[in-house]
Image 1: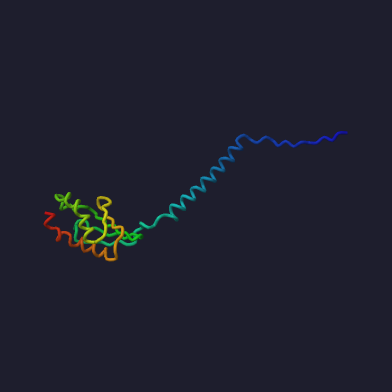
Image 2: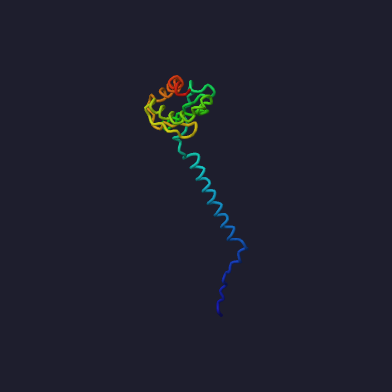
Length: 148
């Protein structure tokens, strides 16, 4: 007699079985990507522009005095609440053209006017903060004739 061998044939897979596995794999990949993005955003971000200290200045505009923001990377931001001050609007163009150069000369560092109210000193010297404070405090007295 001839031996009959039984061949096992697995039952057919239910419809959508492969699609479900693909969905699970895609979900795992998306969770891993989201985790990587969260890590990069919160734990591995550039902190060099973080503000370490803020110092208020006086003498420039009684309606809104500027502040110096000291960044972690050593740069300084001179931030005005309003620039130019409201009481010298007639000399707005003159002030806009001359202020950056005057400040740069006073502190002996390169000053960049980044936005309407923000001036950056990227490579300040140790005495730069004091020089900025002195420049701001004496600005109206020093340039009184030019502001009229």
